[in-house]
Each structure stands twice: as C-alpha cells, then as structure tokens.
Length: 80
Image 1 (cartoon, helix red, strand yellow):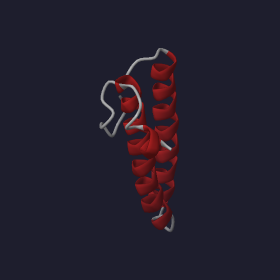
Image 2: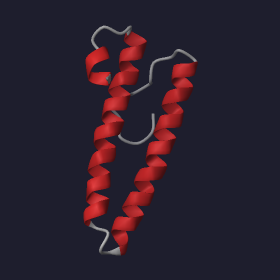
Image 3: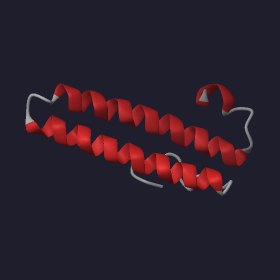
Image 4: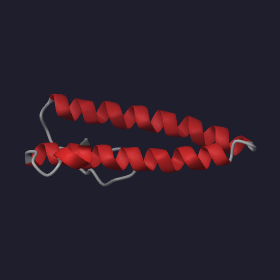
C-alpha cells in the first residue's frame, strides 16, 4: 500500500510511506539473517533485536503521524 499511495500523498505523508517501506525491507533482511543463524545463539539475539527495533520504529512513526508531522529522516536505518 505504501508503494501505491506514496506518489499521490502530501509531502509530509510521503516521508511516512518511505519510512514504512524502509522499515519493512530492513526488518525482512534482519529477520532472514536471524532465522538463518538460529542454529547459533547469535540468530536468536538478532531476532530479538529486530523485534525491539520494529516496535520502536513503529511507535516513533505513529507518534509523528498523530502530530501530522513528517518523519525527520525516513531513510535512516536506526531510529528517526
């Protein structure tokens, strides 16, 4: 949905769509790496970190959306 709607959205909302797209793909990448490494303890730690990271990014994005503000830097990997 973010890919479809980001072109026709207002500028402040486009940053949220870009943030969502980045969060999805980075989350998928970390999830796959963590799943592949579950045979060792590092995989479990990567999956735990990925879950915490996703929750924090979603909360920060929803807070900005509630204030009707653009995400400050939607391309950053850590937290905006």
